[in-house]
Length: 331
Image (tube, rainbow, N blue to C red):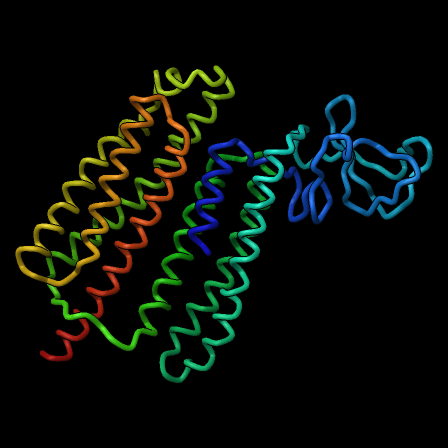
């Protein structure tokens, strides 16, 4: 479910739908948003609830200050200008993409809440399971609050980056819970150099994701400036782009070394093959974006694959830590 949230968020970014719902947690003050622009026009003799919005001719949102039934004409005493931000557009496609993104996020919270309740049965056996399960719930709450601040700030870049990193932290929590409740383990061997290099690779992947969100923000800004002339988006990129591209070579080399070590020493960490597959896909989608003018879905795929890569590396890290613990107990 968390990966579905990440996928939905990536599609929101790709389509520029981040402000499809200008308020939070509702959408234009409704639990189910409007499908047509005329639904946001002022209507006489209509029942309005507190928080519902209307779009004025001068491209400004007004929000209902209280519950009331409207008269034939708009009365200023019932309305106030929506002043959280100055975004005042309605696009039904953007609205529903963002709304579905929020729905998936809300649905993801349900199994996580159930997980936290069930974790108390394992508290005596391993209290960390309960602690991490509760942290996951708080993480989802914090993520929801971050979503509100992202909308209120009209998509401030650094807040989008924090939003992405928090999603990955939640992934880490859930992977820990999955691994901690396993009852059988594969035959694997601990190797200190493999462990240390994997740690460096994990940090580099996280840095790459952060840099990637910043490059994506630069592309968004270019789109606003020059429109959809994709061949010009990265004509004069910022230094973050060059760091992102150069670091990808280091990521490939480091993980190639891990793949080689795992194979030659027969360590048993077969998921390293998935890591290499993800990295090769990342390289392909990166080449497509830069040299072939951002083909459809290349941007969200690039982000989602990076998130999956991070998750697989994290799980391998948990496997190595388990083997390290076993080797310590034997010695």
